Structures are given as C-alpha cells and as structure tokens.
Image 1 (cartoon, helix red, strand yellow):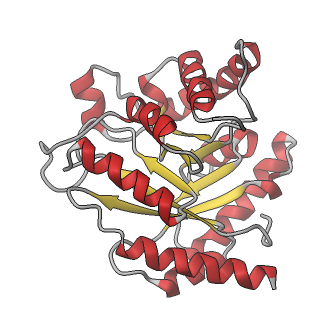
Image 2 (cartoon, helix red, strand yellow; image 1 turned 60 degrees about the horizontal axis):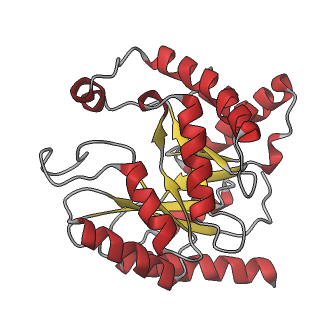
Length: 270
C-alpha cells in the first residue's frame, strides 16, 4: 500500500430514519465542509433503530447526488451485487459518472460487495443463497462490469474506481486483488497487517501489483476517537469512513475528523 498517499475522509449518510430533505441537505453540508466522498448504503430497510422506520433506496438517490453536487465524490458503501444484472450495474455506474462530470471527469465510485442482509433478499424476492455462492456471483459479475464499460457509447469519463468491501481470505481478498482500486473493511488495526499479507499473496497469484490499492476502513462513531484513527493510519489505511444516521445527521465528529485529516496531510506535505 502507498503510505505517502493523502488521507481522505468519506462519510456514509445512512438513508434511514430521516426525510429525504434531511439527506439532501446533509450531502450539501458535507461538500461545503470539504469531505472527500459521500456514501450511502444499498439496503431496503433500516439496519439500526426501528426496523420499520423511514428508509430510501440507494441508486436513485445517487442520481440526485450526482446532479446536486459539484466536487465531492460519491457512491454506495457498498452496492449489493445480487440485486442487479452485472451489465445493468455497469450502465448505471457509467450514467452516474456522466451526470456528475460537469465539465471534468466524473465523480462516481463503484463500491460493491456480495450482500449479507437476509431481510433485503427475502422481502424483495431475491435468492439469498450462501456466503460462498454470493461471492462466486460477485467474482463473475466484475469482469462483466468492466467489459460493459468498454462497450458502452459513450464510455465512462474516467476509469471508474472499484471499491470492494469484505475481508474473507479465500474468496473476497482474491476478488480484491483482481479488481479493486479500493479495499474496504472493518478489520481492526492489529489484524490489518495479516490481511494485507494475504492480499499481497493473492496479487502474486493473479499477476497484479496490489501496492496501489487504497486501504479503507471504518472510524468509530460518536465522539471522534483519534487513537483508533491513528492506529488505522499506522496500519496503512488512507481512506477513512464514518457512518452517520438520521434523523438529525450530527456532523460534530465529521468536523473533528476533517481537522485530523488535515493535520495528517499537512505532516505528509512537510
């Protein structure tokens, strides 16, 4: 992993327990504050709090974000591969890329994973399968996504970054080694070195230099925990993500982590 890469902060605006107007306003505030990436998630129901609470769908929301913002990158943390045909996912991603370009390159990040929340599958009529079968489906989908990007007219405005979530050593990290520009996980700092060693071995097996893959991880929610953030940084993390939930989307910790990000980047530049 490239340890001299700048630190970036992504904020996951969890689309639960809030009216859409609050979500829209929060994304605008994140851009104004200088957050690097705005994420949502690809679920159909709240994951915390009232499980029957307010909730909105991810990809249609991203179209609005692409239009309303000017600078911030955006995407899902992460898309569920199971819900959509691979070629359709590629076309949707390419379209978001163009909507967000506004005279330059697009700003969409294609975050994806194999899916895990069984209620989403059951209530929307998708076959849940097994952890292994869902990972096999993801492994089969990503070459199709990349091939479709080449075929589309017009093609994407840039090489759309692929972000893959998960930590499994037998399948997930192989998929990361083959396809990812960004690897996202919740792995604690003490375990990241081992996972990165596994990823490097998969890189050797699939014939790809994985040293340029950006390592992404989750910050503790609530009050900013700089000790944890520093430990992740020392372990090689350079994209830090923070989840915030409705109805109010408190940005106190976001501001604190932005200041921490800037201190880290100032030290790198010195």
